Amino acid sequence: VQLQASGGGLVQAGGSLRLSCASSGSTGSRYSMAWFRQAPGKEREFVAGISWSGDNPIYADSVKGRFTISRPRNTLYLQMNSLKPEDTAVYYCAAQRTGSYYYTANWGYWGQGTQVTVSS
Image (cartoon, rainbow, N blue to C red; front, side, top):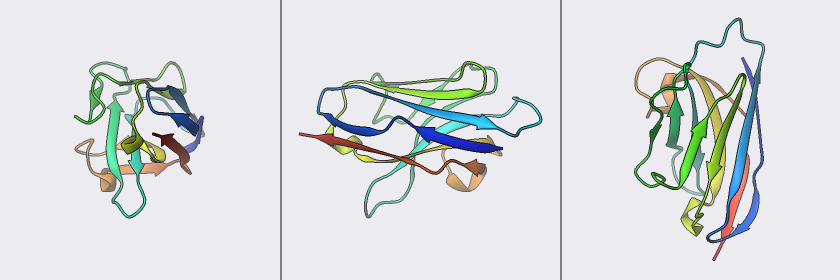
């Protein structure tokens, strides 16, 4: 599976961005996908995840009610609204989970990351 993330940029606090992650090279689409982020000097953390069917997405508490994950066909999206300066990070998409959504070690494939910067 090859993942290509895009859509990052610079936005003011309160603004919105939509991240995309195109997937290719898989033999099927029955795998979970997720977004993680990593701020400078911090560990990579889980943001949102979604099953292959798109049912029951899950979110980190810090983004609930502001971010929405979706995956029509082979593209994963993260709609980010009401952005805050603390959302500033490099955002990564991931695919093929084994076990819990929350741990980076459980994901088999990663995109290259896209920078999101939220100014106050």
